[in-house]
Figure 1 (cartoon, rainbow, N blue to C red):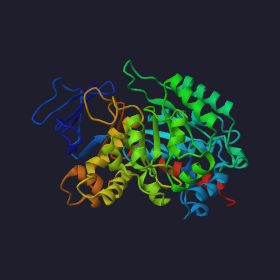
Figure 2: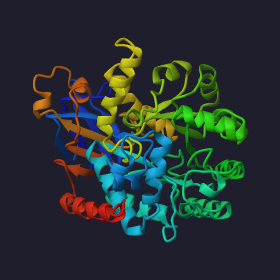
Figure 3: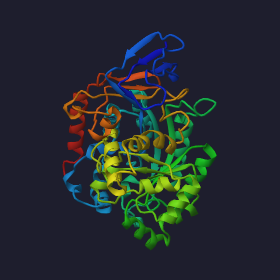
Figure 4: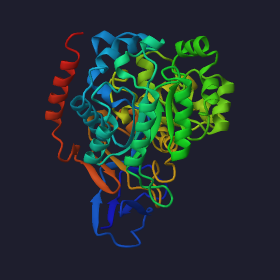
Length: 451
């Protein structure tokens, strides 16, 4: 069934003024101004009130943290003391809590125009060894495209690390489960590696929360299995000091020693790199995810996005965990990135289109999907976000695409993933949001009751 999404108010694509034609989950035609589809469509969706952008792609998150938003014990703290306050709560995670957290995070993301998300799950208390399997099940149920990263920590408080003993695992357990998850869930896509709905990546939490052995062996496993690698890096100056004190290296030097400085890797945050380190990232093809809201809440600093791109580093966008950003809304993250980077680099250096590009093309490249996601083009996956400009915040707008960013769009009207509508008229079919929120709040209160 060929679908013509017809005559949008605006569209982030060249030569598609009259919309796009979708068939078999892909974009098969761009309809230019004054034209009709070459092959007549079976159905038509009138997009005259909609601004269409490629489905937004979230490249860093911690779904489980939707249970600990604005937690009093963690307010007004920088990264390390913030983690110390939250780890005891996260140690109480069970399967029901995680399933609720994943559903809330994915629903919030999808309603914000996000069609593909990653997640970085690295806490595995007893009884939650199948955490990534839980995430896979929710992604398939909601129809969301996902790259789920098997996180890990094997250094606890007794080893000089930050997390309690109850949430870390030993190296053999981590590597065996990583292998199992790749074999069970990682989709390779078509002959060109495109179209996969669920993929697995490997993601030690950070270089200072795992042993050197685990960093090295995880990288070797990723090469053997052809999957990507992800971790936090250069988020705070405290991290740089900690790595120098305990490892004798700055974080990027240590990363390179462990076999992680290559084009298979994308890094979360990347705030505190030197200019020389940025050049090394560019030469290696290592990408960076910018998380503007989280960085501001924790006062970690500002990722030098414009400088990185000028040097040749690929930059994507992430909402980060909902205990720091306190939100999983990717279109709002686009606006935050635009404002933060414009403040740093000036009006002429950063436009609204740059911010949209970070959340689409940039993010797609971070996860190795630049060939089928993040762009409205022939042959690309039919992952689209459609926004209306009918709220008071948009009244009086001129440029519709600019209005999405400058006026603060926050909720998509329609979302399409792989050619299927997953959000229609602002609702996710089959998901009662009110019930979901009530159950989630009750779980959160149970987990944090004694704090």
